[in-house]
Figure (tube, rainbow, N blue to C red):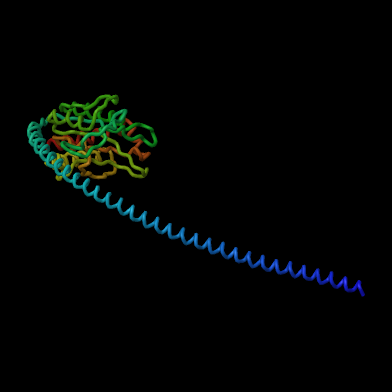
Length: 321
């Protein structure tokens, strides 16, 4: 009997202990969940605060950028205003210079010598990338002179081809009784396009013949063309008609002598070597070094002679017109 009572007391003690443990676990779980909930709430509050801070920063950035843009716009307005004033002053100066140049040029043109022809073999061994105005009194500038193109098949340089043909043209014209002045007789020079034009101007030349060869990205393009200014040229537009006649006569006779594709007369006011002229001038683009066939043709003595014959006939036709 005593033993049963003792065992019952022990069982009750164990039960009480288990109950106490269960209660403790439940309380701990409740506290843990409450703490976790508090943590989640704290995190949510922190996120809310961060979002508000970011919004404030964005507003601040927007305001800052708006202020900067306003300042830039104000600066740009002031700068544009100053540029307009400078441009107006520059245009006035250019207008005055052009009027002076035109007066001087008219006197030179009246002194044209019908027996003198100036030949300019285009380019040179080394180009000169220093800038010069594209015409008298111009604010726009271009490189003084470039080295020119190279034959895709022969590897011949344009400056050397130009000189070879130009010397042959000189000899042929001198045989016809003309006085010929060369801007250069060697490749080792440093002459800008305006300096070459000056030689023709000072000589009062009846014609200024500029010898060149062409080059483009496409290897299929070929043919001969000549170039001169338009009547709207601000530097020597009054010479456009004579320059066109010279260009057309040289082109047509060149085609007759060589059978080359006729690509016409190109009229442009972007060539400084033309814009500086006070005498009739033409640029002869003899053929395309970028075209293998024409590159190889222009390298031969026979075809060079044909080109020269055509140019001589064209120059004489123009002078006798």
